[in-house]
Image (cartoon, rainbow, N blue to C red; front, side, top):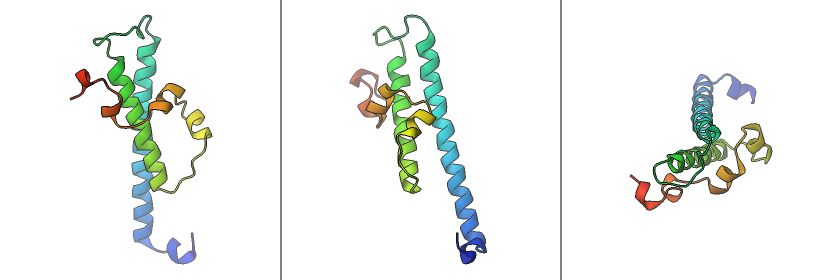
Length: 110
């Protein structure tokens, strides 16, 4: 940051808002991943079936990771493979990250 940028209170406020939005996105993503992981820890929770709830949890996690990556890109943060490891993002979620509507079967879409 240049000295001119350092003395600009508006720029400082914008940077603070960006940081706040980024960390809010991180918290949302981590919460969605935690709900999926908690569900998966229950015995037989990965059994297929429309009522078991995993489909929706998985779709939410995949969407939140997608939003997180968009946020990083918008902030011009580097994309590194380590990001997925650092945030403990399962490969299954990583491969399917994207909008919920593409990660849920038609019967469970709202």
